[in-house]
Image (cartoon, rainbow, N blue to C red; front, top):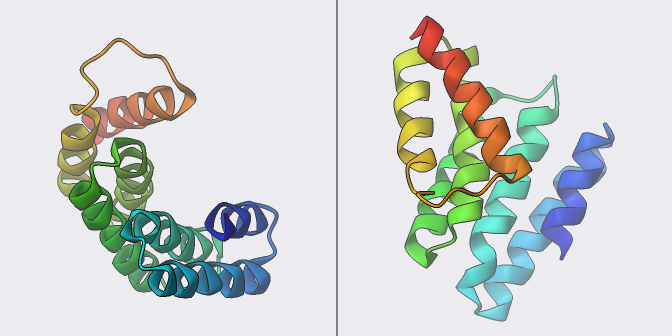
Length: 134
C-alpha cells in the first residue's frame, strides 16, 4: 500500500516524495470507499510531517490525531499504537509530558496479552521514559 511506502520514504529522508505518496494514499483510500485504509493513510501523512525536521508539528499532530481516531473507529489496535506512540513524541517535543504519558498509557493498555512485538517494546520503553519526567 502507498501509505507504508510513504512512511519508508520519510524514514529515508525523502520528505517531498513521502508527502506526495502519503497524499496519494489518502486520496486512493477515499476513492476506494474502503474506510479500513483511512488510518494508514492519515498515519503516513502525519509521519511524513513528523519525521521532516522542516515541517510543522501542528500538521503532524493533526494527522496523527486523525489516524488515531480512525484506527479507534475501525478497531485497528496496531495503528492506534503506532499513531499514539508518534503523537506522544510530538507532545513531548511540545513539553506536554503528562498528556503524552496519559495518551500512550491508554493506547498501550489495549494490549492485555503478553505479546512482545517491536511496536509494543518501543511504546513501553517510551512510556517508561515519560513516567520519569511526567
